[in-house]
Image (cartoon, rainbow, N blue to C red; front, top):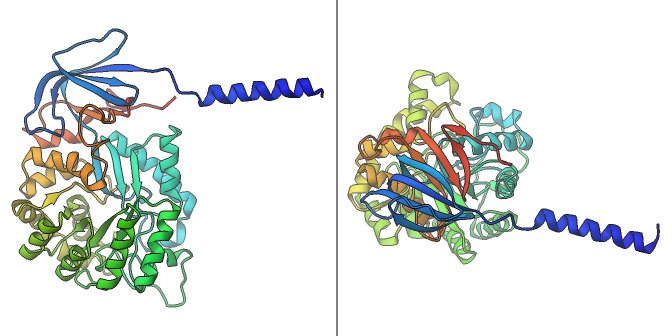
Length: 439
């Protein structure tokens, strides 16, 4: 082949690559919203136009306007809200999460499960999630694939493997024979402050957006006690100091009162579950700006399972679920009345056949007003993630992450369980109740 022909071929190849990687044509869209709950004001707005250019909101105008050349999306008969945010998701978890799953599922299965759960999140109106525990492969890969529009799913912030001490809630060898060994277990275990520093740095290097720790025992694990504090103050402080120095927030799975209070004082950004918090805990949360993520839906699910079909749960789990979970809804209400910041998290992805938006109704049952429950799953959740400039509200400059429902969710919060329309970053992912396939 001549040099000229080689150069011509290279040039054509470069042009083809440029064409594939060049930005798409600019797109202008206007959404006509019958009622807008914008995630900013406690007062809904009527008959407004949301102006969108590409993936961002460029303006909100009163009345139904139609700028020249803009595509019109007619939601004039619906209530429009910011895309929902779940700050306690497990993107690669499925119903086979128990003891058997430890021996039958591999990383490939987890990736496939993650793809399914990501589409399910969109179907239920969740355009952003904080993955508070998965493996080291599936969540980062899924996050990249969603960003590249190869698969449908929410925006993902992932903690990858949660961290606890040996014998803690994230130790997969709990309840196993001493000789059983799980590959990768060491990525979930920290014993000592120096180890804590190393694991946080390692997680950040490998793609974590936040760090999840387990300073107390849990409900859905074998043998450990939710009331026990399973990490030391020094270990927790090493995690939070290192994570914050790297720009990462820290979520703490905690049930017992001692572990709750010590985790707050160590500087964690959120208390997940927080079952046995008390007035002192609420005072500390307010002083430190710590969020509570009550996770009421998973509590309801595991409680119902423990009562009706305990054989579906691992050993020791039904007893713990029956003892612990009824307390969680009361705790959420008391924390709210005390002025603690509440963010919505379900802890349920892939488990059972429940709609994640049921969490809004459970928060209302706990004592939140419908608007504050909506704020918990929009602006509060965005603040906890650290992404208020991009998500959590329908405002100029934010991503065009928008959902729509029929009726008035302030009068009937269960309306949020029937999302008819979902837009994420200007792309319509669900319309007329059906999830679309990306081009």
